[in-house]
Image (tube, rainbow, N blue to C red):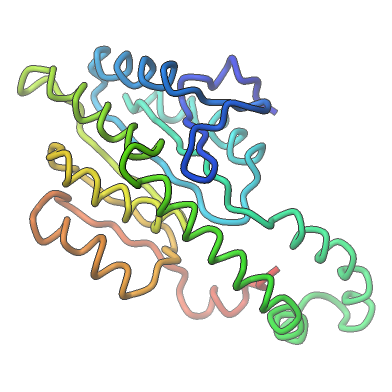
Length: 243
């Protein structure tokens, strides 16, 4: 894994809408504010905000932060990753580990039969999981909550830079991270942030209604200049198993 020292200034850890001051990867309000201001004052060429998807532990998300550093550094990109609690992944992991051996014996490997069985057996858990994730993303950007504060600080810091010296801004979200970024965009507009160069969505897990209400307005107003949307093709999606 990556130590907190190696990635400390590259992530913000938020749980239930608040900065998480505990654990191996902690975040505190005053320190986070200082990190944001210092990043902007260093005038990077690019500034990227990343929101991971669901079923990601804090540890695996933190490891991703560390692994991507060389690539970002080589390309003049300064990154801030939002580590947010996506809830119940331990329970689903336990279910998979306990059932996997039986399923492989019964079905000679994971296949469509397993997909259907898994979906039916975990429907109530999955519904609770998605409700928890949506709630976590929404609460982070309520007034004076952690995500809202981060956006206010970032916009304020960017406004201190002379025109022409501000970094190009990029938002990147995977799966449920699209929900996080949708709420972020609303607050970005609320604080009259500068135009964002790119919004990149990897297999976004938000609904069409959420896209229309939270993301499309930012595109229509040119708050976001370009949207890049990546999906699996039908064949690849079909071959992927839900576990």
